Amino acid sequence: MWKQSRMRSARRRSDMVIVKIGDGLGNQMYNYVCGYSVAKHDRDTLLLDTSEVDNSPLRTYGLDKFNIDYTDRESFSNKSFFHKVYKRLRRNLKYNVIYERPGENYPYDLNVYRRKFIRNKYLQGYFQNIFYFQSCREDILRQFTPKERFSDEAEELIRTLSEGNTCSLHVRGGDIEPLPIEYYKNAVKRLGDEQNGVKFIVFSNVRELAEKYAAELGIDAQFIWNLGKFTDIEELFLMRACKRHILSDSTFSRWAAFLDVRGGEVYAPYTVDEKKIYSPEWIKVEYGGNEEVK
Image 1 (cartoon, rainbow, N blue to C red):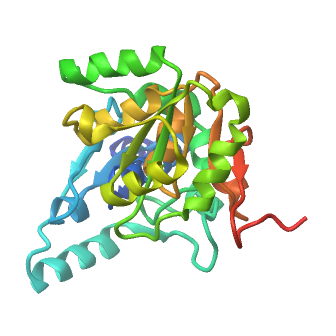
Image 2 (cartoon, helix red, strand yellow):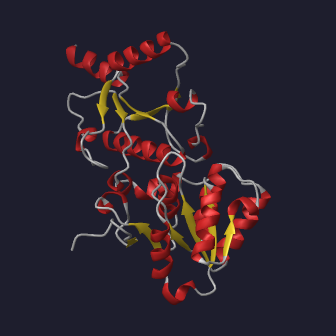
């Protein structure tokens, strides 16, 4: 009798992995990948908490544009002190909250995979370590495909960029310090003779600086904002369509390179954490004050 009751209880129990989705599209993709990786490992259902982006005046939820695989999505208002307290109490009482390990850049935290005695995990952090992605790489490449057809303008440009001798170049600014021009000069230099005839497609959220950099580099550049008006996911796949990539220090350009499986060169700013966030075949580019210690 006890055994039957226990079996019924086990069938009723529906353990979940909940992951907090926040910030821009690139960070949301990292959040999702960690949640999906853990849910797959634990054979649990996956729930997305999109409260942060749903309440943000600056960010929007973008994962619904992909063919991602999750069970449900929850979102709570954050407009008043009461709402904030209620959300936090509910989270802490209902779930086992696992925070990304502090004090380390881009940690790969095996605690998120611990299943024994931990039910209904709530994952909160950035989770940008590449190993979360590598553990379910084929699934993620299949899921991070557009759910709906792009605009005719975007579709045509994707074909043009993928067929041409193109290199994406991303200049990221705004809420983070842009990489110096020296990095981009060194990256273009690393192209060597291959830079002859290359059309550089420039993506940026700081247009004036990007135009200044392109002029100083003396490259044959086209700016994405002069080629049409595109959504975030369209820009991601326009960037991916280019045959080579010069990345910025941003999650957005890293994802464009991750999703491009054709094997073209990827140039990324050197960092001591490169093994945690870059594919091993990417070419690391040093620049002033940021050289590798030999």
